[in-house]
Length: 399
Image (cartoon, rainbow, N blue to C red; front, side):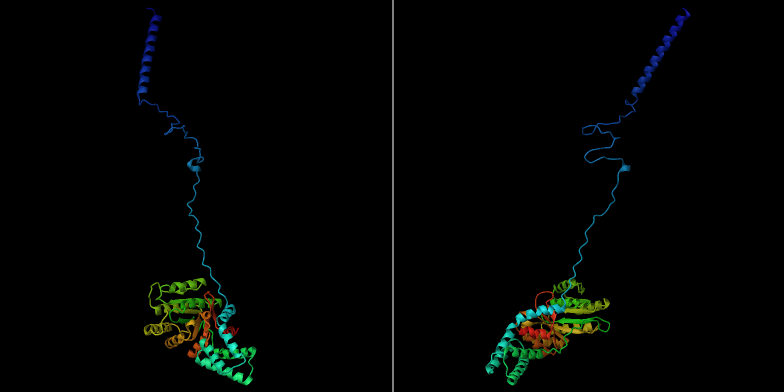
């Protein structure tokens, strides 16, 4: 064999070896896990549909989803809550304006009295029968026996001396004599300013049903209209709604109310606390409401005396106002006497005077007690309470 033939044989053997080794290596590579390391860059969706490329922003109805670094996070802000509106503070009518308005109401309610007297006195013939009718008219108006006798005697003298009986002249006489028995000289002011560097103290008393709590609320409005700083004391602890009612009156004009959260609490303790609070607040005046009491109930009247005594451990009581219902007429006289004995009345508040033609009760109660009518109520409105004016009262009767 030549050298060339030998060389070709060696080459053929080498190629065969390379082929065999390469086949073995490829088989080993395919048998390692059966998968390639290279993963596709997209995957089929779990529930069908087109594939989503995770490297691209997601777009659709909810907008584009950007990378986490690009997403703006809204701060956790609580929703705005509208503040509750502040209660409206009312400005009560001034007392002067009330008097003008109330005079017309009083004239309507007492017109029968004035007209009846004028008709009798100016009729041209004043015999004994006519004078007796004048007396009956005055007594029916609750003027009282003493005041009626005084007025008739004065009118008889004038007629006898002057002789004139025309209506204008008689009206003038009647006005003068009525004004005299109403007594404009009485002090009708209410202590409502600080006394000796302390709040003035007003105690309001009366029987059931006269409107004491309402009167206290209306009195607060009178004083607020005069620019006084007022504190209310709810010492009527027996009537469930009394403290709530008084607090409502106070809230309407921006006046605080001292009360107990416990029904049936000691009224003297509540009154004491109210006076103390008024002193701490440097108020001008404190008004104490009390429970209605029947004048023939000794225990209740004794308790009212206790309320006053307890208050006086801290402050003098400057004013004790007795609330009387004008429609009770002479029946209210006994009430007034008993309350006067227990707590020392300094003034009268006549309520419901517009509901009666018996305006003479003003005169009767003053003469009986020796204390003046200081306030009159002539309606249901919040400002239908006014300081009593003798001249306006008499003029209203005769209008």
